[in-house]
Image (cartoon, rainbow, N blue to C red; front, side, top):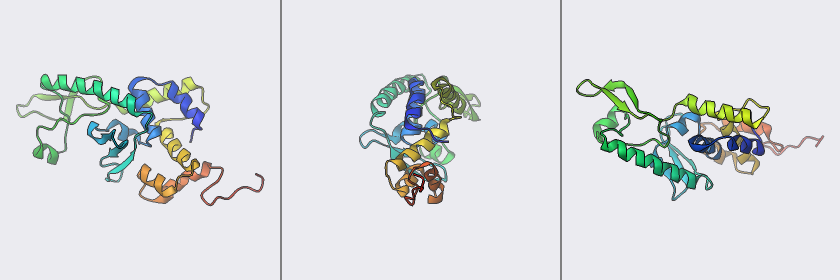
Length: 216
């Protein structure tokens, strides 16, 4: 399922706040749902307008673009996130869970989510050294973003069963429509095999070989 450009804009107009930013990144950067939710502040580069995705699908890092039009709003959002983070550090909170190796090497790490959850919650992966539960602020939940996009699609009155992943599909298709090389799109999407990326050519008026129907 792919949305036309005007359909994407219709959906985005129905979103606000951080959910609009998330949807902008799904479509404007081609992020997967969990890649967006697990994005770290340190992996957003405003100078070079790029986003680094750590340990993405397949276990590899990749780099994609940060849309110019999204950068100002995202910067303002991160300023608010930073203010909350500093206040939590002062209260003895503010750290996030790290894999065992990173936790041993850098026990004082306090890496931040770009889209932190509204409230702190008990970390189910273990307790503190004294046995007390550890409170941490996780990232926004999958269902929250999925539901926000679902409602936006309904409000936009688009007659398609669109979802978060539809925005990523639309990102790939629209890049190909703009004439970008399939290998470039493959790198941006993080596909291991170009044959996976080729599925997006099925909705183009001019498929991969440039073949045009005799009826057209």
